Image 1 (cartoon, rainbow, N blue to C red):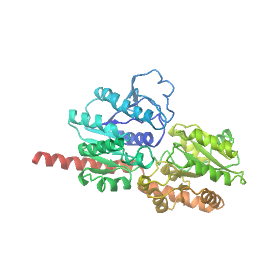
Image 2 (image 1 turned 90 degrees about the vertical axis):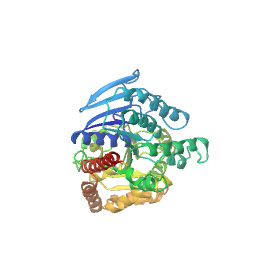
Image 3 (image 1 turned 30 degrees about the vertical axis):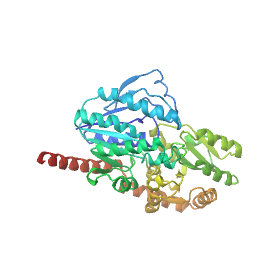
Image 4 (image 1 turned 90 degrees about the horizontal axis):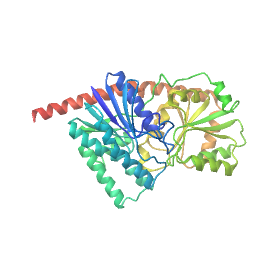
Length: 416
């Protein structure tokens, strides 16, 4: 069986989408699928092409048995017209990558950006193969909630029309969270026969409890520190300015340190906030390859995740939650909704209301003051992901559901 993945984001880019798709591709290959990827030249979240890709229009690569077609697009960081141009140029040039690909048995399209549904629908029709539209974020709902566009604007109406068209022409619409699944079945009125579910997971062999990497800790200048680790994109949806306000309230505890590993649109603003507050208990580290992240978790006492309170975030599950659990570390989650409930169900951390630096500072102090609680919550998280969120198990269940649903659909078409 062959599966073709169309996505704007893919490793070596770092973030939720590249990480999720890398794991999905790996498990599909292990399951015996032939996988081909059409993606962009790596530029996210830097807003410029990675070293070695600057003067490239097209590159074909082979990695771990997977053929990857990489295409030029207009690189961009942040929102506005430049980001729209970023989306539109990749949607256009992706046609060239699809033309250079072999006909698959399934075409899997990652959204956002939703505009990729257009070449996806076109080639699913040309090849006469099922189109799986993977919905990791509910755009345009998220864009409206974040204030990127007004709900009654022409752009919003156009984007909502694209969304309805995409769901209507997709063979399957895949939800990444239960909240997205409920929205697809409810407000979006996608037929239940089309809706599949594949949540974020974690590689429990890569992420696990490890001995502290003392060399890394010393190299970062954090010897003797108790570290709260943020690993992932630094974006506007995370409310990280409140985390820095909490760090300000903890300045009298010099052994407590916040370590941010990643990049994103808010990084410069956060650096400037640190300078204004004269914070010495915060370090920003550039993003590192996914395979190196377990070493960073080994030096942390707890992980950190955060989402600002928006309607669309009620059904969100940040992918950064699961490596924290798998590493046997407790999680401090700032936010509400599905992700907060996940932490409570796992009994693997502390949930803090969003926009409350005092509550976050208190949670950090309470957690670090209790070594037995740190160990208990970390152990609970590890057990929870082993039982429910191992990528190997998630993909196996999803493939069974996909194959059964597709077989039923083919039987129905042949009878009709």
